[in-house]
Image 1 (cartoon, rainbow, N blue to C red):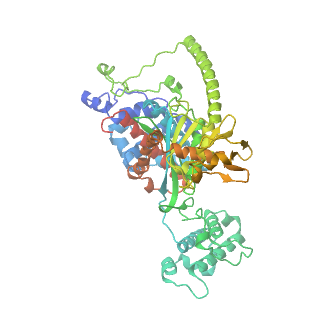
Image 2: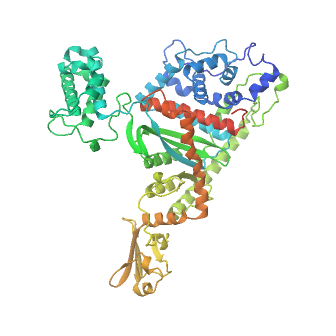
Image 3: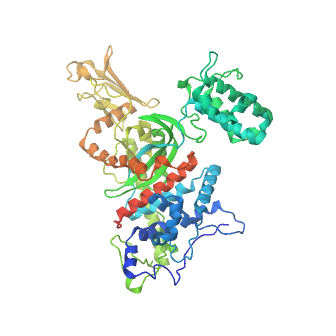
Length: 613
């Protein structure tokens, strides 16, 4: 049954109250105090009420304690067993989770496992990642404390290895067959084909894969695939009792991915190695994992990290985990959507929680009531009562100012899109720093339409020919939308723009081109009466960007992206992202969420200069 942990009552026997003063001072200056002040009270328990029954029964373990504990687990690289021990025996953990007045912490050895199972099931049934929602909400709280306004954003992606074994095609087919035969033994042992019974014998795998040889008539792969087909046929004959099993679905998928698709289904022929899709099954123990070659062979997933930053601090605002065949440009589109649906000023998180006694602080001795920390967090927060009349007037003023600001931003946005020129110091824009793989002209336009400036560190694709000038050497009047002059400052005889194809066309006098110093490198095409130049708006803008990327201002600006290149290393070394003890996309993403939360919490500690952080 769902029961919120809305407040904690301080007992007379509270551990912190009975500590010597010097120990309390150490505790207040530790990470635990910041955690219980900033992170713990902001955990939204109501978000997780959907995981529990409404029928009267034993209440759930406190969700804010579970979420907080799982963040601490990743922060200190603990196992579930170590985490439980720390909560029971370490006063700092109890203080961080506001359990110092509890006779016994409200957790057991299965609390975290059962909670994760509920999260997995809900995600699989609804497609909603409650953990990601919570972690991103906490990121907003942290950004406010670190004074990060969300106007500067950088993104990067990293490969995450699955913990499954990299199987050869023969090993894959054999493993799928063996798993299905094992399932058949439980469901309908009598239908197992006679030639497949040896799969149940010890040592059969090594004998089949490593010791047997290809025959003159068929290879080992063909032999195993024929057995797969035989297993498929007997399952179809039995019906839903077998075909509804996960093992059969895996067998069916493997056959479809590993064999040629032709009209003769009875004649099983394996596909060529190059014809196998990277999205095909890599290992039945992790059916979501995919294959991608990027610097090396990778089986698993890809993570996209969206980081917001200022001159001193940074945090991960949002993240995503997909199969590793998901491209950076798709992530770029997703990032634009994330930045668009959230307020451009990311630090302006909902302050209404402050009216709900968010700071439930453990009572200290009276001589410590006014004690403050150098990070600006008072030991006791006292919220002033709200003056209702003044508040209503302020709300009206804020609404009026907001409407005026929105109208002005709308006009400014229209002008910027028309000019397609964004100034570096324009505070109304979100600056999104990416590498070249995230960039395309179309994505840049999409971003621009949403007040986002896409700033790539490099460009992919075909490079500009060394012996040819860029199309940016031709001046285009954005208001008239025509070419007005060439690199030699000569005006065209005729100029026009085709809106359907977004193409500029201009004709220049041959006399103007005869003695031009740029003649050898010019993009002009000679015709009978005039010299013609023709290019698309995309070509012109890309060449302008190439030109701008060589300037000192652009180089200085894009250098702000460099710091995110270190995030993958931290996630690998500190948070063991390649060694998560689970498999599957859903489970992996849930575990990733807690690692991201731990990363952000560490950033909070460092930003507030917490001792020992």
